[in-house]
Length: 121
Image (tube, rainbow, N blue to C red; front, side, top):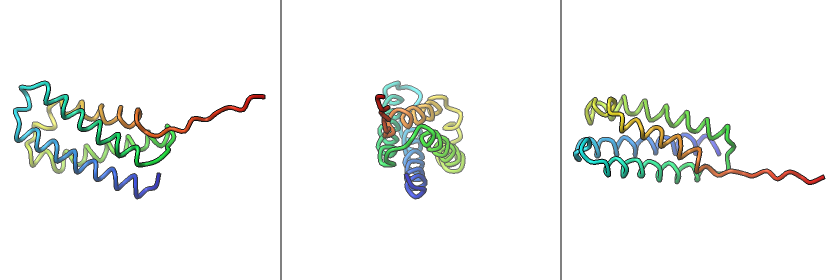
């Protein structure tokens, strides 16, 4: 993992997440359908899994750093972009907050791991 990949994929992720929030909150009846919520969370999980796999083999500590950084990017982008463009209800909706939990789970579950084999004595 390089800093270029970390910040580049993080900013790309945030741009797509802001776009998804604007589309889902502005153009669909967000509060009425549960299947739309699951579709949104699935989009987040697939996107995060694809991007974290492209980072290469990372350790658990690096996965924690990626998670914290990408969550901070997402929160800042939501306050700066998604709130003014789609309405401040995006920040108050708990279903969008579940998206942050999905992001954390996807990074932890889908990052490439290296298994260390212990030598037999």
